[in-house]
Structure formats: structure tokens, C-alpha cells
Length: 179
Image (tube, rainbow, N blue to C red):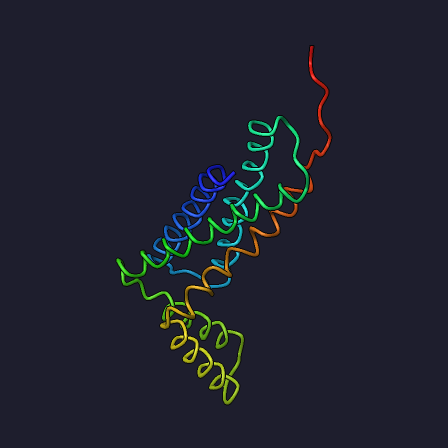
């Protein structure tokens, strides 16, 4: 089961990071990016990449268990794939940040502040928001904050897909032998 989870989790995590990093690099080109639309794009990519959870459970059920799997083992496999995808995602993201020196949090906070300005927020309310974003930058610089936050971005999506996949793919009945 672990080999199946490792294969599908690694694929999922690498796909998510690859597409999101490519999207960020592209968005920084002419025209720039928009934080809210890139967030939705990121979660869409996660949903698509984490569909490997469904494939992993189906593959394991059909190839290793003869078409029979109960909900809890299916859910457990799905959680394992989601956890591995999350770890791969965190490791790849940290590697990307270390190698590229990409100013992610600076870009993110600048975009969020600009969104507030575009929405007409001014005065003390804008100052409080800017202070909050500055505090966020300081916290994000700490790996003890950044690593779990990065993991939390992807894992709940995987948890949801694991639940749905386990419910759909469960087959607790032993199939009759074919003659």
C-alpha cells in the first residue's frame, strides 16, 4: 500500500508545485498576476492533481485486493497519498524559494494591499491591514510557521478527495469467482 501511496502522492505533489510555480513565474511577466485569481487557480490545480488519490485507491483495490476494499482502508490510503503529496509540495516549494529567492510573500502582501486600495479602503483601516500584512511577512520568514502553513494549503483538499474517493470506490463484498 505504501508503494502505491508514494508513487501517486509524489506525482500529485510535483504536479501541483510545477503548475503553480510556472503560473507564478508567468504571472510576474507582462500584465502581472492577481492574488485572488491565482489562489483559485492554485486550488483548482490541487483538486486536479489530487485526483490521483482516486486513481491510487482504484489501482490498489483492483490490482492488489481483487476488487474488494472497505471504506476505512480506502480512506487510509487516500490520506497517505494526500500526506505524501503535502510533504512533496512543501519540500518542492521550500527548494524553489531557496534556489530562486522568489519574493513570494512580498508579492503576495503587495497584491493584497493593492486589492484593499482598489476596494476603496483608506485611513486607519488600510493602515491596520498594512500592519497585518507586515506581521504576516515576518511570520512567513520563520520556517516553523511557513512549513506547516504550506502543508495546510494542500492537505485539506486531499482529505476531502480521500473521503469522496473512499466512499465511491469502497466495495466490501467479495466478488464471486469466475469460471
